[in-house]
Length: 193
Image (cartoon, rainbow, N blue to C red; front, side, top):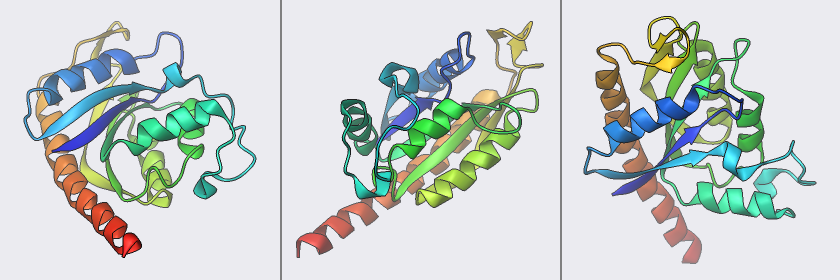
């Protein structure tokens, strides 16, 4: 059994991430092969990166960073619910990622993008960032369009077939998340030897 965070990747007022993340959580909770938790970056109230040393050093000086690090460290895999703003991910998501480093390492990530172009470019940018964080990303992803998956661009009403896309992404994510959990456990064993 692995632990998966469904990360709400926007802090913008009126964001679409919240209903999408709750929908994904409802689908995920039907499974018996992982535990899922919603993680809202807005709740951590992270300021613009205010740590004096890079996250890779794990010399956190701020209480909000230590709280964020403990939350991320507890998971084996992540589902990022990310908007596409100006062909990229939200600044608040990038900032939250940049606070940490080792807590992300050797874990898996899947993506649910949303926007005018189904969030595809935001997800592609996020894949590059995750590669640097040593996170294995799964191929299957979910793209949601503001034109076809939202009534009047506001009320979330996923088009038919979207749930199947979520299931496919979760299947891959759980397989990779379990494999990388074994890698991390082996690394700990070797470090203690």
